[in-house]
Image 1 (cartoon, rainbow, N blue to C red):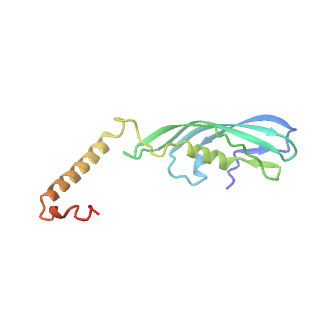
Image 2 (cartoon, rainbow, N blue to C red):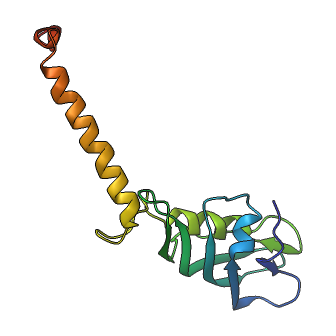
Image 3 (cartoon, rainbow, N blue to C red):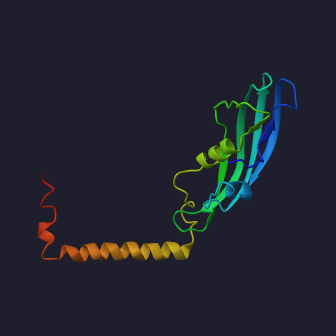
Length: 159
């Protein structure tokens, strides 16, 4: 999928090192059909070392923020993006080099698996609702302990 934003023109300059700066906002992530990212402000610095007509290596540095829904309360949560992949990228044949996919992948990989607000920062109404449901489940388990079938619990656990 070409996003046409992170294109490095390989024919426009001689061998040597050059640095490119790009910005990835919400529109960039939407072009990859990412529905989870609500907002984004990611800066990408791409250092390219051109070694010949179609030979080059690049390193990418990503810094900024993305906003996603909190896994606990679903309210917007702004997370930092700070990624300096150690991978060296090399272009295929052609006059241009599209690094859009690499930038997208590393920005997404820099996010934590569990995206939640710090303790006490979630929407209090949602936390209260979730707490009521947890208490309700605990009460249901307690009442099932008084059930005539409670003696059968764990019958098959001692194998």
